[in-house]
Amino acid sequence: MIRILIADDEEIECRGLEMMLQNNFQDIVVLPSVYNGVDMVKCVECDKPDLLIADINMPGLNGLEALELLRRKEFDTKVILNTAYSDFEFIRQALLLGANDFLVKPVEEKRLVAAVARVLGNMISEKKEFIKIEEAQIQMKSMQKALGDELLFSILAGQLNVDNFQIWLSNLGRVFQGGILVAVRLDTEEVLSANGDAQGRENALQKPEEILERIGIYAMEELQRFCTLQYKVYKGLLYLLIFPGGQISEKNYRVWLEKLLERLQKESEIRPGISFLCGVSRWKDELEKMTETPGECRAALKGNAEGSICFFEGEYPDSVYADAKEIAGAFACEHMSQVCEMIDRRIAVLKEQAYSVEQIRMHLALFIQLCAAFLNAQRRSGISWRRLLERFREKEEEGEIRDTAVQILREIAEDTFHGKEYNSYVEEAVLYLEKNYRNDISLGEVADKLGISSFYLSRLLTQELDRSFVELLTDIRIDHAIELLKTEDSIVKDIGKQVGYLSPNYFHKLFKKNTGMTVSEMRRLLKQKG
Image (cartoon, rainbow, N blue to C red; front, side):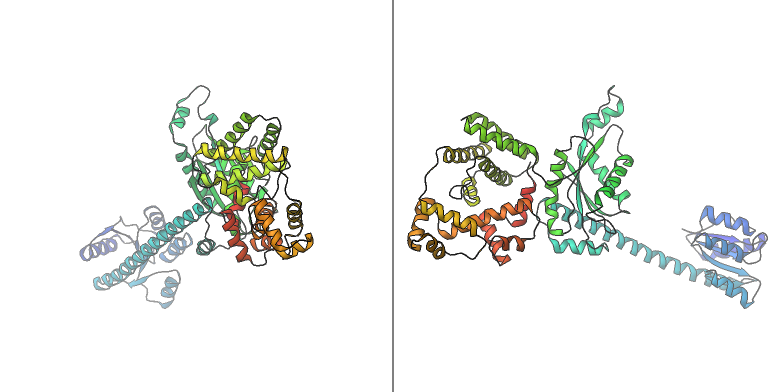
């Protein structure tokens, strides 16, 4: 229904206009008329009519003055001015103030109907256009939310499509200048109050995912004016993907983010008695590195002994080193039951963090290499990454994975304490490759250094190590690449060059073939130490 207000100091004029409107238009409501400019302004403010038919010459405030006041207050009511004056100056002022049409008294019904019909027609068209625009905006926001949700999931799954992410940011009018990921975990120790009040019992009955979802919605509503933000509840945690932009960088993001998260913790409209902890990844200045952030967030949460906000520092958790040292000591004392218990503990920690079976196998392979370092037995002859993965391949059951890890560690310890003697040429060849793997090196070059034929060296390597020269060199280079991924944030092509591969594409394919993972996936796993 179209709401119309008539303002004129002559009551009879108001009645006449009202009758003409009702006789010619359906679906309209004529509001009670007003007879001066002051009441007209109050009525517009209170009732917000769609159309105002006002006399220019009224007591208190004339029509032009009242119209100017309403425009200052940003009311968008359509206006037809009704005047006894035909002076051009009055008409010019009315148009400048946004009047949609004007009528000269005495008003002819035909002129009134034409003017009102014209204004209402424009109004309806504007409303339809506005609805179309509004619907398009809602649809666009929905699509952006869906795409953002999908892209955040791709980060959590380690399968980020950088091109799609750039498109998403571009549609939001943003440019990637660095970002971080925050994992939010509910602190449920205070869910039930000491006296077990009704509010505490109600909180206890709520699903954690529902509470986290509400925190995510609140974060979107309250924090988007400070940053580009996307949220997702995934496997018991709320993840907040944050791109600050502006003047925020790796140098100052911690202070800025602490204030932002403290604001969220203090003002979030969650039920009393429930608080939450935040684990924050390191700052990433490349989109490709965002896949590292979920593991960093979880590691930060795990190390969050004090305080509600903890930043990932990029180090192995002490428990990993402690376990590796303890296993080395247990082997020295031949305490195999203790070794089994610690491997079980490693697996339990990884399962708790929702690692897949493949990720658990990968983690244990890395853990075994760390144990071997403590056992002082990290020989290329027996512990290459490729050989470790081959031993774990097709092991799906937890018991099988544990038994395989224990058996490999047993063999490493046996090699350490009752060391297998290798041919001296083999030992020298391995040592030479270790020192020169960065160079373009050949079997013939190594054989010349040893003073033997390349054929004889090749046969020795196959007999003693069960691998060819190329396989041995590849194992050494891949293992060193993994060491670089543990300690550096270099891009793929730079790491490839550091271990002897000038072609980034060839290095990437070779790395995938020998480890079963891409370089990015391996980097992410190395950050998820559990």
